[in-house]
Every structure is written in C-alpha cells, then in structure tokens.
Length: 158
Image (cartoon, rainbow, N blue to C red; front, side, top):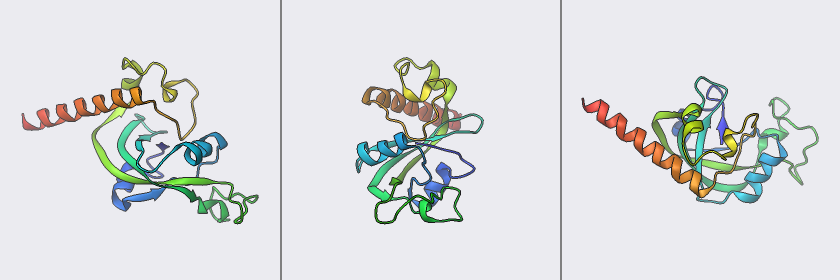
C-alpha cells in the first residue's frame, strides 16, 4: 500500500496503531482492497512521492469492508458527490501497524533485486496505491528487510 509520507507516514500509523486506508479513488485499487485483501494479510507500507521512495514499514489488515467516510465529507479532497450511504462506492480496509523498518528499502534497491523483476510496483508508470505482491516477491522483500535490519544492528554496535 502506497502513501505519501507528508500525508500519512509509517510514523503516523505507529502513533495511531490502526487506520483505515481512505482516499483511494481508483476502482482497480478499491477492488483489490474490497475483494482480495483478508484480515491477517501482511502489508508492505510504501512511501511514495518522496525522495527516496520505498518500503518504510509493515502493517497487517485488521478489518475489511470498511466504508471510506471521506467520500461523504464535502470538506474532504476525497469527497464523491455521487456516493450513496445506502450503497457506498468507496470501500477500504483497516491497516494495523506492525513495524517501522530501521532503514527504508528504496525503490532503486527493489529494482535491482533478483526475484522482483515482474513485481507490479516496479513497472514504469505504475500509479496504483494498492497493489498485490506474490508470495515469492513477499519472501524476497522480507529477506531484504532482515538483511538491512541486521546490517543496522551491526553498524550500531561498532
């Protein structure tokens, strides 16, 4: 799940513990949250529109089928005048904080990592804020996180 850190960062998620993934206004991304995400699924919390972009933390799906209340708020930039409370158009998930990475895993490192060549996030022009990750891709990224975390601990002791 992508987010812009100046809007909502991994630090914000750590502070609030659980937050709905509101503001998604792309039907494909909405459908992924609505139809494919399940309680207990892992989330790679990705910071975008920043320098450098990359995976900043880990989350977990806490609840599915959450109505995105921003669609009904005329003061919200995510307001949808066509949304109907009886049949809400925008559904999201609650994401629970799991961990902030010691070091961000930058997009550049993901692009050069064997096993991630076909990852949706790495395709040029990919703009979806919610994207699936295969089990194999998830395993590669978790190894990258463990390696970076171990390197941080080693440097800290020196």
